[in-house]
Image (tube, rainbow, N blue to C red; front, side):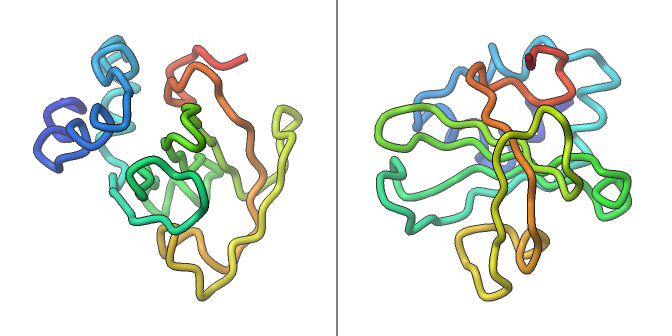
Length: 135
C-alpha cells in the first residue's frame, strides 16, 4: 500500500536517487503503520540549503487532523553526503534535542510547516518515526 503510493508519486525513485533503500526503510512496516503513512502527503520539494544532494528534500506531512494530534512531519535528504532524517513535532518531546523556526515566507519546506516552531530529532537509521526503530 505505502510503497505503491510512493512509487506512483515518484517518491521511491527520488529517495533511491539520493541513496536511500526504500524497501529497507518502508518495506517492513506493520499494516497499521503502513496505513498511517499512506495517509500522509508525500512531496519532493526543491531545497536551496547548502550541501543538499540533488537540491531536494522528501517530506511526509500528516493530515491536518493528525498534525493537530501531534503526529510528526518527517523529512529525508542527504546533506554533505550524509543521510538525514528529521522527525519534527509542534510540541517539545523529551527525545527532541533540536529546535527550528520556519518563517512563513520559507519555500524550502511544506507550506504546513511554515510560520511555526518545530522540535525535532535526527534519526540516524532513517526509519519512519512510527516504525518503532528510533532510539
